[in-house]
Amino acid sequence: MNPKIFRALRPFWPGGRTLRSRQKELEDSQWWSIDQLRTWQLERLKKVVVYAYEHVPYYHEKYKRQGIHPQDIHSTKDFESLPFLTREDIQTHLPELVTREPGYKVVAGSTGGSTGVPLHFYTEHAFSYWDPALELRGRGWYGVKEADKLAYVWGLKYDFQPIGLRARLRATLLQERFLNAFHMTDENMQLFTEMMVKWQPVMFRAYASSLSQFANYLKIHGIHNIRPKLIETTAEKISLPQREMIEQVLGCKVADWYSAREMGTIAYQCPAGGLHVCETRYLEIVANDYVVEPGQMGEVVITSLHQLGMPFIRYKIGDMAVYDGQPCSCGRGMPIIKEIIGRLHEFLVATDGHFVHGGFFSLAFRHYPEIAKYQVYQSDVRHLEIRLVLNNAAKPKWFDEIIDEVKRIFGEDMQVALNVVDHIPLTAAGKHLDVISEIEPDFI
Image (cartoon, rainbow, N blue to C red):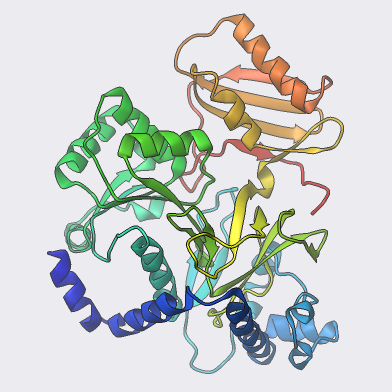
């Protein structure tokens, strides 16, 4: 379908007018000052807490036991006294976390289970408007419009069911094409490349690791005539070498889309580089259970301001990040995340007890072109296993250099096992994990 016709008909689709209304609200609110935004968010926080107390058994019982009443919430400082919600709480108390308001309909969902354990949750009808509106606004910053051609390099199994007539029709109408990240063979990448050269997508949505593999394929084969406007990466942290190669090969900017299946869009990166936290997400950075100042690292805690069917109030999502104390040069008033540092299980610990972010390896290994892919696993504070997939054979001296470099950071007593493997399996969600740690940093 012609994109202009699609966009003209979209308001007449079910929910089309509501989606347009949400987009208009977001176009206006992105230019609020930070004070205007915080005032609006505080009012929403109060409403969410009142609703949860009155209609959601889990929150009602928990707040009642702790002597908390919604009317006591007058400021964000008061809000910070509320208990956290964890993945374990959701897994244990899922039925009690759903609203009991008569007639309120919710829809079941689940995460991909990146760490091996899927999370089940519920959303409501309004979620299907707010989340697409947030995505479309972010893409619009790069000149991408609804119904523009979108290529996926994706990996979640149930996103790739056998393609029937209905699925093909949907993909045609929505201008979508797919490369399955579970099957990144040379043959599949060649077929996808031929399709992309002819079809010319306006944007890619992809896992960083999968798209960097595809970009490397294009680079090796000297293919430089696929020219989208935007690369949208999500679900895993993109490294600097990956970003540089993808932008060089595909000739456009990479935007981080920070999201989660249970929360939808959390933050989106603008062309000026700022990773803007969306208005409908109240995001705190917490260490040792206290909110930290901008510039300090901590755990990401999110409250969704438009999810009432199953409220997420002070939800520990499992990521580490740093807030930026300075506004973005683009002029938008939304707060800025300086860096999403990674998942909790991506933090490693040296023998003297200090933590080392897994990003050390992406920077160190960029100087070793022999390495095609790697994964670091830490079971305890004395042992590191590094699994390497190599482009070509390497000399023993090369391995000694890597071990010396790792011990320089992690301590001479660290037992480092360097193992060459044929391949590194993806997670159940189709993602590649560079780093896996069984140790929780002691500042959480």
